Image 1: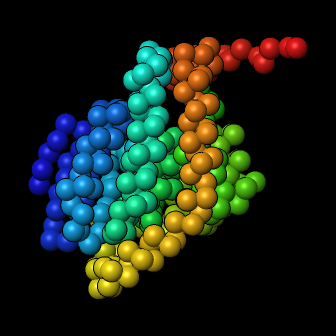
Image 2: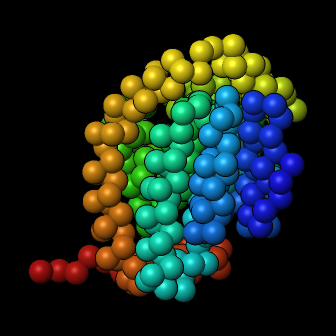
Length: 259
């Protein structure tokens, strides 16, 4: 087991567990977290399966919102584009990647679930997007790739209204693969890993890369969305949304300016 600042990497034979290790902030990530996860993928390219999960009670609460409130352009831009680099690493990894959703997966945390090849959730887990409520937008899966899974109208509901969905609701929509009692999550993930490890690694990789058809088609859309997010860094909406979230109050966004 290898502990790093923001993640714990635990390899068991051909299975690599990457555990997000910032439970004090619900495993929300910043650029350092992203770089550590990408490095873990690079260092374990010979693994048969990679599992991503969270330490503590949360899976991942997305990007670290204190950074949004401070609105440092270059820092935030690095985190935004780093998120796409991370999801690319997951999508282009030769092995299957499973999200073991042990708790809340919101915002970029839900997009992390969407980016993984499979998602298995504990019954108590909740999923959803938070972007437009906190001064951002889910352009890396929540507004596009999720629509390919649950349908456009449902995905807009998720992205625009920022509701929370139980693991069972997410499963019923086809958002995740399986829901199990909380204390059976890791055992169920192990069963999926064992089944995958019995397959040909060569042809699993071929099947995975071929299955990226929607990801590949949507990636330009994601990059365009990131450009819009970057240009909005420091905007009144971003600062108010992030500040309100940190202060646990309802945001008061300025109305769209009249022409």
